[in-house]
Amino acid sequence: MTAHWVASPLVAVGRNGGRVDLCLNRPAQFNALSEELLAALKDELSIIASDPSVRCVVLSGAGTAFCTGHDLGKMRGSRGLDHYRQLFAHCADVMEAIIALPVPVIARVHGVAAAAGCQLVASCDLAVAADTARLAVSGVNVGLFCSPPTAALSRNVPTKRAFEMLLAARFIDAATAEAWGLINKATPAADLDATVDEFVAAIEAKSPAAIRWGKALLHAQPQRTNAAAHAMACDLMARNMMEEDAGEGVDAFFEKRPAVSKS
Image 1: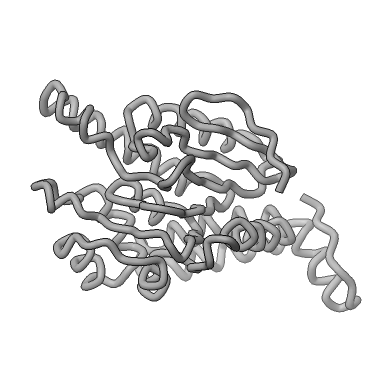
Image 2 (image 1 turned 135 degrees about the vertical axis):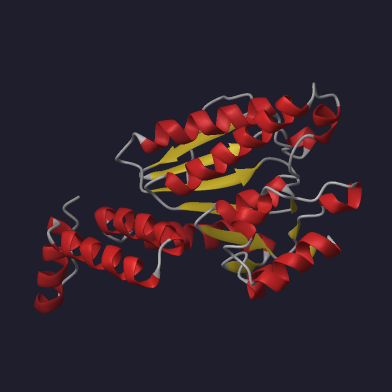
């Protein structure tokens, strides 16, 4: 990929066709999530959400780590309970913005993804990690149960595996993360970018409208009863069939030719 990076003190932004790259840019602090970094990331996600030409987002970290979680040094000097509540709510807003984004977000993971950094990975729609990457939610080791990451973690891995990560608080390698369902694929570090590119290409080859419908449906289903989930899925399928891309796709199937997206 040829990225065109825009100078930014906290989040580097690149654009290549329908792909947007967001790179956490505090390498000296292992991309720890300061309040300023969270604000910058939320701003970029808001811009992307309003741009219909974006097809997917790749989230990465500069330097030797993906993200080591909250900036504990700054947290320790905080101003009290209300400030902590605001900080964690701000972080949750970023995670929710990723989920609410109408296009898929791919985590490109290298080095360490810990605590809220692991939460970022779990909040993304897809995740690819170098085989040398390590992931953890290990706050309990310093007396802080990693409470906010439980929301995303419990939606990615089985409950007992989530408890193991939260209570044993040990790092797991990328192969284990793949086996548990926390990431989609562990790949040799030298192949990390190529593997991410494969996911991007797969997304860009599909109907943008279908991808938008599908992401919204998938994230909405767990909160519904089985009957309500089926009702929502049936309604979405019916509306999806009214899209030009669906008609073109069905015609192309019968005519044995590649479909040409209309959206």
